[in-house]
Image (cartoon, rainbow, N blue to C red; front, side, top):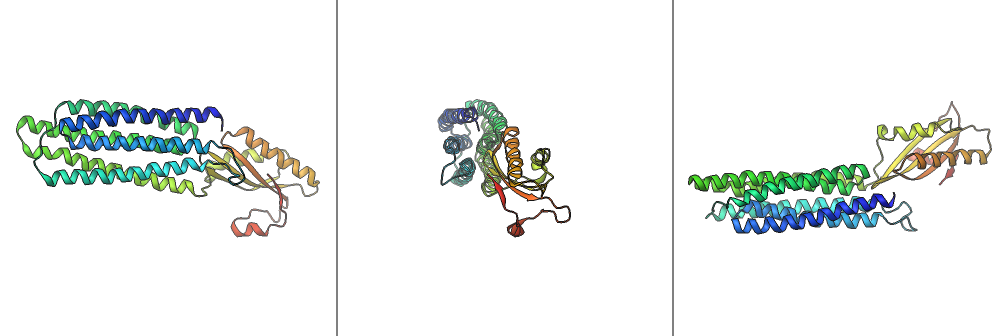
Length: 318
C-alpha cells in the first residue's frame, strides 16, 4: 500500500494519543477534585485509549515493512495483532473499573460530586464522538483493522461518558435535594461503564483473533476478483479463487483453466496477464499466485482442500 496510506493512519494514531492524554488528565483531575468515582473510571478508560493508540501506531509501522525472507507475504498481520492488544486492554480496563466502583459502593460514606464534573463529561462526549467518526471512516477507507478497533475504543468511551453523565447528574441532583441514596448513582454508573467496556472488548478481541488467522474473503466479497480474472483473454474458466486477508491487503491464490493445446509459454503469458490485471485493478491486492490447468469440460478442476494436492497439472506463476 502507498506511503500516503500509512501517513494518514499514523496521523490518526497520533491524534488519538494526544487527544486521549489530554482527556485522561483533565477527567482524572476533575474527577478527583469533584469526588466523582464515575469520572475517575472514565478517565481510566481514556488512559487505556492512549495505550491502545500506541499499539496501533506500532502495528502500523510494523505492517509498513516490505516482505522479506522470513515474511514473504509481508507484515500486514501486525495490524491485526495491534487490534488484539487494543481489545485486551479494553477488557482489562473494564475489569478494573468494575472493581473500583464496587469497592466505593461497599465502602459507603458517598458524597455528591461537584457540578463542574458534568461540564467535563459533556465535553468529553463531543470530542470522543468526533474522534470515533474520524478514525472509523479513515479505517474503513484504508482497510485498517487496527484503526477500526481503535475507533470503537473511542465509541466505547462515548458510551462510558454518557453513563457517567447520567450517574454524576443523578448524584448531583441528590445533593441538591438532600436524597443520599441518589449518591449511589455515581458508582453504579461506573459499573455500567465497565459492562459496556467489557462487552466492546469481548467482541473486538473475538473479531481480531478471527482476522489474524488465515481468513479468506467470503464468496460475495471475492466475486469482483473472480469476474476480473474471467475477463482476461485466454482464461476459459476460473476453477478456484482464494483471497487471504493479511491486515489491510489480500494475497490471492487462483486456479484457471486454459486451452490444453496451447504451449506452456502461452499458458504462462495468460497467467501473467491475470496477475497484472488483479494487481493493477485492485489496490488491496498485494500478491497473486496462479495455478494453470488444461481446460476439460468433462472433468473441471474445481477442487478444494486435500483434493487440491491430487491435481496433476502444477503449472504455477508467482
